[in-house]
Length: 491
Image 1 (cartoon, rainbow, N blue to C red):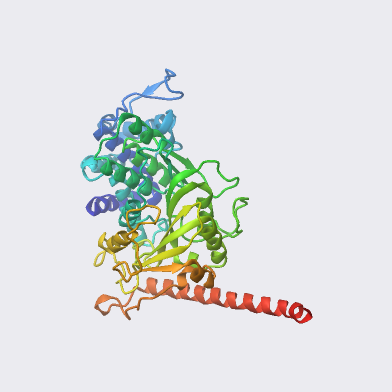
Image 2: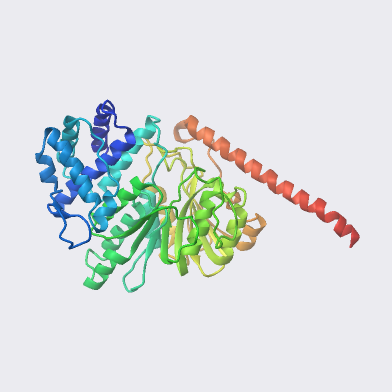
């Protein structure tokens, strides 16, 4: 896949002279890749009608062979017509291509990109190759520090480990629904479907198969490009998902409720200057990730379970304790996974992150924490890439109960990275889950290597944030002591 992304990226440099920026180029690739993969999968796009289904409107040949046959100025015109027809088509096709616009000025450049895509049998490369190619291009952009490269995705290794722990199985439950409220390119949804088909050995009864195809997978995405890619990926898996374009945190609170929520809310503070006006949020905060955590609690059904990826600062930031206090009262926060350093390389190699697992409807009695970070060399793209081995121990400790109540969990559990903490211990730390540390950190990464400068800078910032949060807690205690002293004296 790296070679494929490298080839497409190399051509991107040529297109810059045609006035096409990196974001536009990636988007144009997704349009063309979908047509090529639809052709490989036998999806007939030779007569795409506009307007309502069966309306007898004008039909356009949008198939890959037809587009591939054109050249010169006619190719540019034909490509524009294909995008227009697909954008006006009913159903999922119209959703995928809504608002799509051609960005090529040179027919030779468009023809060359079509030829590059046509050289590869994409469906033979793996089930999620479009996302891999897209993310590979974003990795290239991140490495070169290009504008807009801050968007990044949950590594496949992490997604698959979470899905195996959560076991999102709709068989036997006609009302089962799954959601990712910040779905990006659909990685969690695709992995959940892949897991299900592997568990079912590719065979679902007709009723369940139709329900899975149309009524199980839901998502929301704020940005049009990733949402488009998520729709494409799931459609090419034979699904007809519901993925809305919009802000999941916007008021009013949604009505839908789900059995399983798997998500990685966007990191960072962009768009988080104001707290959302949501009556269902017990804590008012402008912290975007903490708001997503509250949102997930809202959209879970009673007994529903969730896994949410959160950066370290969400475990100690202002109001983190308040949010986690509410969470432990309303849900069983049974497991926290500390991910290895560098998990999000190359997008943001210095970020430290966690996965919190909880079940709605019963209060937390104990929290199990698995430390997959301390004493583990930082993940790097080439020399130490993230692999399933990094999380294999966690999966064994998590056990076979997706709600975190496996009988295999026991103090010690045969793995000193896995520790249990009672709710009283959590309360004593004011629900700040970053404070539970029991393993000794090695002074340097394996081989005596110093971390990358960006990682060192990120860690320094996080340590300062922790220090400031600690000072704020001390000041709050002092204020309560000062304000309470006269009352105590007068009593």
